[in-house]
Amino acid sequence: MTDEIARSRAELIPKGYLRAAVNLANIALVEGDPATGKFEGVSVELARDLSMRLGCRVEFVTYPSAAKILEKVDQDEWDIAFLAADPAREDRLLFSPTYALIEATLVVREESPYRSFSDIDMEGVRVCVTRNAAYDLHLARRLAHAKMVHASTPAKSLDLFVNGNHEASAGIKQALERFVSEHEGFRILVEPFLIIRQTIAVSCSHSSAGLLVRAFVQDALQQGFSENVVREAQRNGVALAN
Image (cartoon, rainbow, N blue to C red; front, side):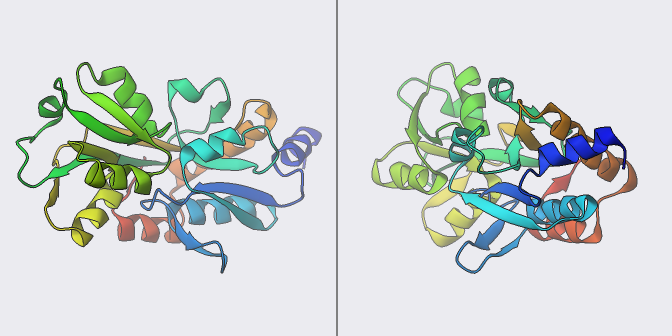
């Protein structure tokens, strides 16, 4: 191990093990129970692969939303975070290459007239959104007429949509599909309004660590993801990048 790699490794895992921040609201990529410590999903398997490469164990640090992960960027709670790349986050984070692509779409009431994103972007339409989610940042740039109503987590956004009598709620496709399967009278717009580029991020203050993470993802893209990552991607309908 060269001195440079040793320094990068020390910067990435200052505690001697890898602390991986995961957003439990993003069920396309991670599901688990913090009480039992059992986790599964594409992000989980990638974190395990990275820890094996580093020769250390991994511990998962769970958050209810991407916003909560972002709040802790420089508070020494995590070493890497599984987050979507977005220009609005580049002042705080260094992003790896994209490892997976997931869709963001909208759920509406079954009897509503909305069939496409352009139908939604009208005066008087209110869209419930999780604050600082990747799709929130995107909609803030794209919506010209509809108004966004913010909630702190995806679950609270859906509650707001249902109980507040708003017109739509934004979210990742897998989470909205689960919601529709459990609640009658709702449907999902077929066409996604955003393809979210999922990455592994580190703090901007840890540039050497960022190089190690970037190399890890680049190698996976070039040589192929592990069998466990591929299995979890297939199980959850996640498109791995190539």
